[in-house]
Length: 375
Image 1 (tube, rainbow, N blue to C red):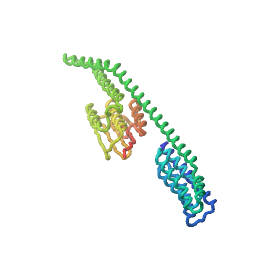
Image 2 (cartoon, rainbow, N blue to C red; image 1 turned 60 degrees about the horizontal axis):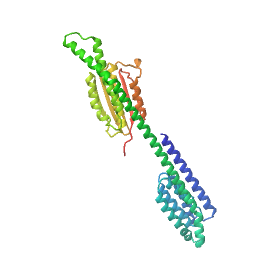
Image 3 (cartoon, helix red, strand yellow; image 1 turned 45 degrees about the vertical axis):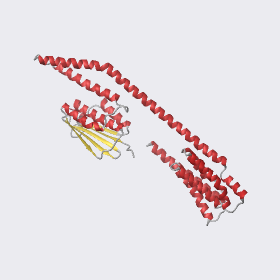
C-alpha cells in the first residue's frame, strides 16, 4: 500500500512538472508574437504537446524522448525561437531509466536537426540558424541533463543492491539460527523422550503379558511419551522446513486430514473454487494452520468431527477449520502458543486470521491469505 501511495504522488508530481513546462514554453512562444493560424498555430500545438508529454516520462521514457525531440525540431521549423526545455527533461528521464544508447542517438539526431529546422523556417540565414539552434539546446545543458540522469540511476541501483544484500543476509542468519535451534532440541530432548517412551511401552507390555493390571499412571506416562515424541517431530520439522527443502503445502492436505482420522476424529476435506498455483510460502502456511488446528482439536476440543475447507479465489486462498467440540462463546479458550504462531504466519504474508468459538458450539479457525499470481 505504501508503494501504491508513492506511485500516485510520483504521477501527480510528473503531471505538475509537465503542465509547468508546457506553460513556460507557451508563454515564451507567445512573447514572439506569432500568428494563430498556419505554421504559428502548429508551433503552439507542438510547444504544448512537447511539455505535456513529460507526464508519461516515468512510464515510457524512450517514447517521451522521441516526442519531445520531434516537437522541438517542429516548432523550430515553425519559426519559434524557444529553448528545448522539455527535451532536456526527457533526456534526464531516459538516462535515469537506463536507456543510454538510445538517449545518445536521439540527442545527436536532434542536435543535427535543429539547425536544419531553423533554416526551414525561412527566417534566418545559415549563421543565424546555427546560432538559434545553439541557443535552443546548449550542448553543455544536454550533457548535464544526461549526466544527472545517469548518476541518479546508478545511485538507485546501488541502493537497491544494498537493500537486497541486507535482506539476504538477514534471511540467511535467520535460517542458520532456526537450524541451530532444531539441532539443539534434537540433541537435548530426543534421546530422553525416546527413553521414556520405550521404557513405558515395555512396562505396559510386560504387565499385560503377566496378566497384571496396568496402573493408570503408567498408561498416562506412555501416552505422554507418545504425544511428546509427535510434538517434537512436528517442531523439528517446522524448524527445518525452509525454501531449500520440499515444503509441505496444499498438495499434502489430504494426507494430513487422513492422519487426523487415526486419532478417532472424523475429519473431512473440501476444496472449492478453481485451483491455481500459489506461492510456496502461502501453501506452507495453509498446511501449518490446518495441522495446528487438527492437533488442537484432537488434544483439547473433545470433538468427534472436524471439517477443513479450502476456497480458491483469484487473488487469495481462504481456509476454514471447524469442529463440534465443547468450546462456546461463554467458555472461550485462552489463546496459546499454537494460535499465536498461526497469527504470526498469516500476518507475515499480509493475510487475516479469525479464531473463535462458534455460536452453535465448537471452534472455528478461518484465514485468508493473498496470493500474487504470475502473469
